[in-house]
Length: 379
Ligand code: ACO
Image (tube, rainbow, N blue to C red; front, side):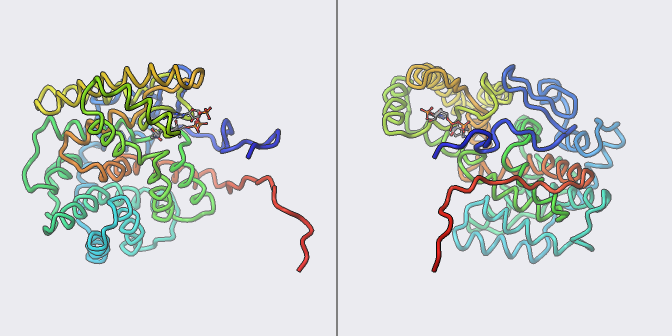
């Protein structure tokens, strides 16, 4: 159904809020996070430091960074009720992102005043949620494998501890750093669908846990955060560089989209794809089986871009963040259906920063709709 003039379908191009948190320059392929271009910070500051940047407006000093990391580390363990929710979710076959949504909602039971929306209450809730999201995802993976969860350790970084909770072994520092860089890379991204969802909820003066629970629901769909699992499926299905072209043409002929390509804002290559391609390449250097997948991905990427340009000319469909996310996360040994939940673990810090900002702006977000239904019906 086409929209009437003046109607912004999908709110395309509409500015819904002012933010100091991040800026997506889709024409030039630039992402600014808290004043820094992504390439300046990715791989150079930790995820906890990046969270501090968004929550306070500046990169922390060494002491501040250590204090924040320790504060987050001390809150990693899950309350019994949340662990029970995760156990039930795994038993019922719920995917990790649904387990995260359900468990996130239960975490308000652990707050002294879950409805408080002061800056101090928001920040406390933000730290608690960022600390516990990885614990939820790891516990869910353990339950799914028929094992008991591994208690978090406070002496590891958030990323290293997540990997430790999966296997009980301290991860290779290269692998932990790759996950940390991934989380920094996806920490915030303008007014994307899940962030907008979180801000809409916060704009009603609702609380941090409610906002992040809703944001997880928005992130789940394949048009937003759910793409990297299917990207990996695609690569595994294509198998060899020669198969790429007929595979892509058949998908497009069947009216399907190629996952990991196209973006509402970026009309050039997503800068996050470049950062993660580098991380994936480093991981490939460390592990032989990843190298083969990385080489295949590079070749498939070239083929997809060429075929998309031919079949969908003028749409400027470029590689997006999810394409190389798939490679990085699979090389951590994670199941594809965990990828979107891992994305949420990183984006949680950005969502929380937007909730804090929205509460400070205190303005209800309430767009209008164009009514296209019947009128004047009578019973
Ligand atoms: N493969 C094939 N065709 C595509 C793709 C794709 N990946 N993306 C867009 N198109 C086509 C559409 O079919 C449409 O074609 P048409 O003009 O012939 O109708 C045209 O390009 C424009 O598509 P829209 O849906 O209007 O573009 P929109 O900006 O709404 O879409 C989106 C952005 C949802 C990301 C889309 O590109 C897509 O579905 N990509 C695949 C899924 C994906 O990778 N999602 C992750 C996004 S990144 C993130 O959110 C973290």
